[in-house]
Amino acid sequence: MSLRIGGQFQPSLILFDLDGTLVDSVPDLALAVDQMLQRLGREPAGEQRVRGWVGNGAPMLVKRALTGLQHPDAEPAEFAVAQDYFLQAYAGCATRASRLYDGVRPFLHAVHEAGIPVGVVTNKPVRFVPGLLEHFALADFFSLVLGGDSLIEKKPHPLPLQHAAGHFDLPASQVLMVGDSCHDVLSARAAGCPVACVSYGYNHGIPIQDSAPDWVVDSLPKLL
Image (tube, rainbow, N blue to C red; front, top):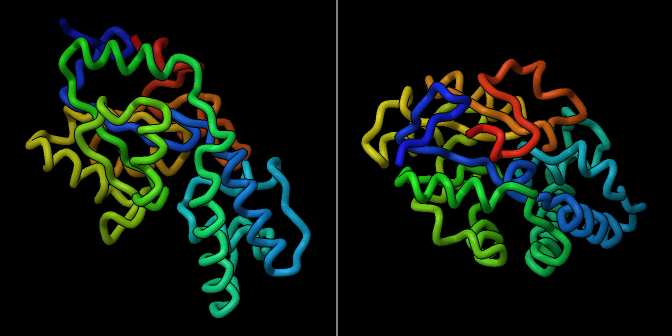
């Protein structure tokens, strides 16, 4: 069975971002952020603000929560304590309120039926990824999982996508990146991969169309 993205591109490998693409994880991330802030004697941030801070990995999320800035410069000692508090909190609530986006499971089934391998390339710390995939009964779909701390660089650097393509012995031109943010687009462009984005994810409040991915859809099955 063949599978063509947008009726034109036939990938040999599909790589997925996780947060904002497959799973809406902000409710649990916000809970962990607020628990961290409360331990530091600060006011909670709330889910709406956290939604605009997600996308660059846990360290950046913590720094944004400490400063309220998109491009923060947190005090190192406070950041170290805060990150430890955040990771402890998130470990206890990572699957409490997160939800799978509509269309994800049917799309993964279609990709599986077509015999195309899939991987996860996320900026989330890798220790949290298997549990999320298992919670949503998705783990068996994925042949490779890369987190933000799996390699020396993370998205928007091209290395994670290059590493994944090399793992499957494929040229980047045959690998489709599916994400929700400018970081996914930048990583794919630098690696030489086609890129599709969903419109419903986390992109710091900026329409993903502004980043000019090859395809933008409101749900993953619309890529088919």
